[in-house]
Length: 310
Image (cartoon, rainbow, N blue to C red; front, side, top):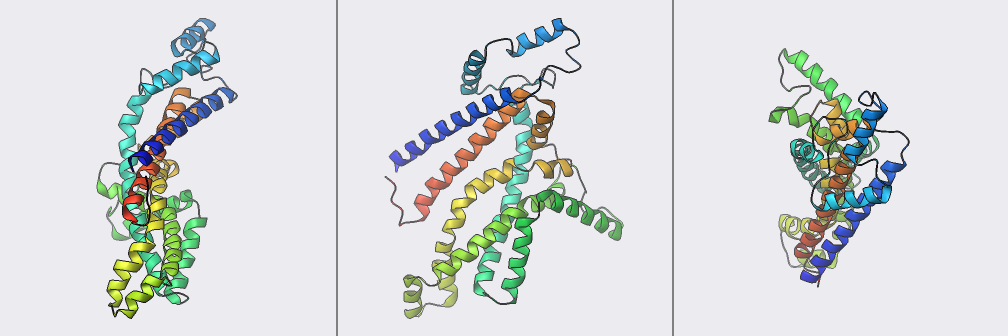
């Protein structure tokens, strides 16, 4: 198990290096100049800015400096936000995205397991048909549509009640998080529901289920101890990447609900060609995703006794 864990960590480091290299090359291949803005009013000012950010050096030297700083956990200064480091932007705003993502994944996991098990129990009957129809909608409809519909529903609800039951936008309390996290988790909930249903239908015909029935075990015990426990393993496998995807992928939801998360700053950085912020947040997101995949792989080995990792 230790050897496997070290191997996964090594592969994770290589993956993060590849992400960092690809991001660095992509940013320098994108047309445009991050210094061609209102700051660079004269050639002298532009030259000073290029020197400050290291853009006057050859590309290989910039790459070595970037990797060296990244290895020390330093992503440099933002091009557009005066005297603000990328590390500070990540430190200040990632907790907001993480809090929203944790609540969203809690909604998605609970709903996905519940609805998936329910559809398997009522296969080809009315509950199964209704839930699977909603699942198709959840997978097909983009998150920004759900975000707009969620805001519209909140406005109508508040108008109907004559008071502000839930805030339409903003950040600061749990009430601000409920609707955005639900909207953010709908796609993942639909995916987990579909996966859980398929897994439950496969497990129900396994020999150990038939043996449990032959022994006279009660239906609830068979369901919770044998069916659900084994059917949930594929869900756990995809849960790690989904946690990372939700936590770091709520760009549109954060913009619609005016949430000061990291995704909002990433979108602004792309619009303004802020190289350091784009590269820093991309590497951070990639490292976070790789870490979650490694953690899930290790947990999977402990949960499933049939897996032998050496």
